[in-house]
Image (cartoon, rainbow, N blue to C red):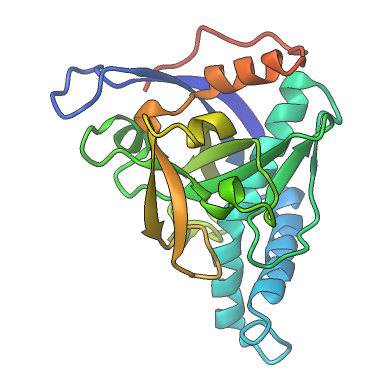
Length: 251
């Protein structure tokens, strides 16, 4: 998996339908011949079997199995990209995967200081720049309402966002690479801030349970980009182990 910084300038070229903001984001590319992809497909299948045990059993036909894996791959790929990025920038063993003990829970990462990161992903049909920059159709950073306000739920600390360049239909295509972008996200405090966060009932695009759920959401125009996430990590006491590039390709 390869990663590099890119910058999106919403008003380049000038567009009256776009907000006026620049985003530092991270492009992650999974090569179709990478052995890691096979491991991730197996992980997605095991996740599907936990979440959909009646659909994913020994008698599941090849086509249905492929669809179940495809549904789970978005979350698995997103989590993996964030995991490698954090350990690359802030040092090996800074973050680890968490074991899923509840099939209704979202995939999480845990920093070595105990802070947790929830990752959610989307597949914007009109491209990543449109999802970030369009004023009217601005995509959203989300977290389950219960993760903020119910004591019985795990209290998450940061809500990371991923937008896929590769369409969901082609995510298992052996002839094309998988490209996604780490966008940034929101802190727990931001999700509780009624000035920028609000509630919505929706079926999250990466929710393989396909269950309508109450969420707290923040438009990406009001969320942190990857520069903001890096500063969040620095504020927690982590030190970047590589130079955080400022000269990056613009989209």
